[in-house]
Length: 152
Image 1: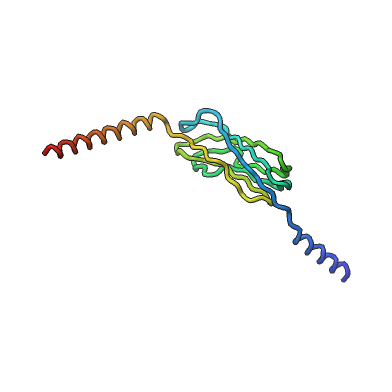
Image 2: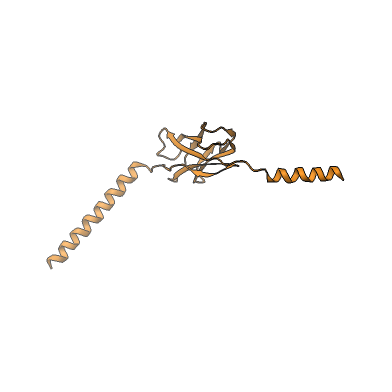
């Protein structure tokens, strides 16, 4: 009976023990050309513990990744990030046909989820040129039509 009481008391104290909160900050950057489907590039994620307590079991991943893109690895786990420490993780991405704006997230057992700034993965520049020409032609026709109507 005494052992059962001691076990119950230690179990209760273990569940009431909470980790002290901390805060994280995340930045991302990318390298290499990645305008067309099939291009591979690297995204660097820097996670900094800006709080006063260690970050425990930090989960780092990229967000808003389209289904036709491949990311390796899909996420990272960092067991311990000391206050003021920065950990750098690299993701290799092979992009698909879909253009997307992506970002990274980081969270820990004792830190709320945070999001990085967003990186726009641009569409093929030739497409923008064609779109601009088409819009210019349509605008020119519309202006010409309005001038003809005003003369009547």
